[in-house]
Image (cartoon, rainbow, N blue to C red; front, side, top):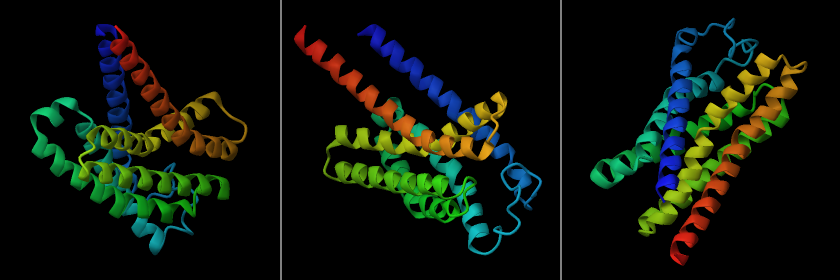
Length: 218
């Protein structure tokens, strides 16, 4: 029991540290976006698409995304949930509103112009739909006071939100290795960035279920 709690705590702190590190790197790139610097890595070759709807979606997305990433860390905190239930509920409403109202719609707009063409675009569109689905189901369970199910579905939702973190880690690793086809590598990273976190959630849920069964048998 003690070993399980220690491992869970260490994994949570490690995940939070990784998210915050990548979030800091994302924010550090903001000077390249105001005004847009088309020599910067993310904006290279986007002069033709960076107009009208895409530009608006891009700016809303990069401003709203960090709110969801940072807010999700607070919402996942057991201490905040138990000691500050009112803050948890208020922040949860803000989180869901920003995610469903700003982050996901703009992600869908930007996906049409994803590096890697339609294979990457398909991945991002499916990711958007999966994140919205997990979030809505989580909200429904919360309203029906099924809080265990609510936590499971919102954890899945946040794992999908963290695909932005995983995408940068995988893409960065591919760059360090020096892959011969960056576009193909990006497509692989686009799919892996959310399928792997979903698989990790499933593995954690199975592990916790087995641990609970073992405790019940003792």
